Amino acid sequence: MSPALASRLAKNVDQHKYDHGHALVVAGGPGQGGAARLAARAALRVGAGLVTVGCPVEAMTENAAQLTSVMVRQLKGSAGLEDALGDARINALCIGPGLGRGTESRNMVRVALSTRRPIVLDADGLTSFADAPRALFGLLHGAAVLTPHEGEFAKLFPEQARLLKDASRGQILDPRREAVMAAAARCGATVLLKGPVTLVADPSGHMVELHLTGADAVPWLATAGAGDVLAGLITGLLARGFSPVQAAEAGAWLHAAAARLIGAGLIAEDLPDALPAVFEELEL
Image 1: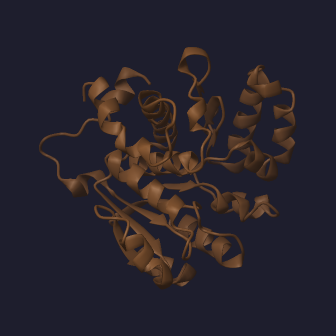
Image 2: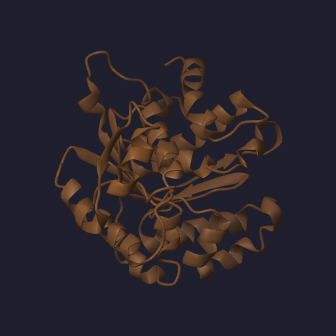
C-alpha cells in the first residue's frame, strides 16, 4: 500500500464518530448471520464510526447476543431496507454475506443500489444474479465494489472468465489483468477478484495487483469467513470516505497484513482483532 493511502487510515484528533461514517451490513435469517457479523466487526475495526447489522426480526436475538459495539436493527425484507435507508447518515452498505438467494435477496440488492450510496456486493449479493448478470449490471453504479472469487466471477462474467483459463493457477498474470479490467468496464463498477494474486480494477482502467505469493503468501486465508471479513473492511473504508478503488486496495492489503501477523491456524474471527497491530506497524 502506498504511503499516501496508508496515511488516510489515520484519524484526526478533532474528529468524532459521525465524521467516519455509518455502515449498514445486511444479514440473512436465523443461523445465517455469522458472515454478516464478521463483515460488521471488520468494518468497525477498520475505522467506520458506527456499524449496524440489519436482519429479520427472527434473527435479532441471535445477532444481538454476539455483538456489542455493533448495533442491530430489524429489517423486514426489501421494504424494511428501504425504510432503513431513509436515514441519510448511513453512507455505506454491505450486502450479500449470509443473505440467502432468491427473489427477495434480489429485491434487497435493487433497493440498496437504487440509493447510489457506496456499496460492497459479495457472496449471495452476487450469486443471486448468477442467472441474470445483465440485470445486475443495469443497476450498478460507480460507487459499487464487487468482490467475487473465481467461481462467482465466472457466473457473472462468462466471456471474461474464459481468459482466466489461460492463467493457469495464477502463474500467468496478463490474462487475469485483462479479464478483470474488462469485467469492470462491462459492469461499470470496481471489481476485486480474490486469489493468490488479488486484482482490483475500476471502469476507468485503473488496475492494482496484490501478490499474496512467495514471502507474502498467506495460505491460511483459505478458510471460511475470510472473504466476509474482506467485504467488511472495504465497507468500513467506504464509510470513511475512501473511493471504491482505494477502499478495495487498502482493504485487501490490510486483510493480508492481518493474516500474516496471525500466521498458521488463523480463523476468520481473528482477522479484525489483528488490525490494531497492523495499524501500529504502519505508525498510525
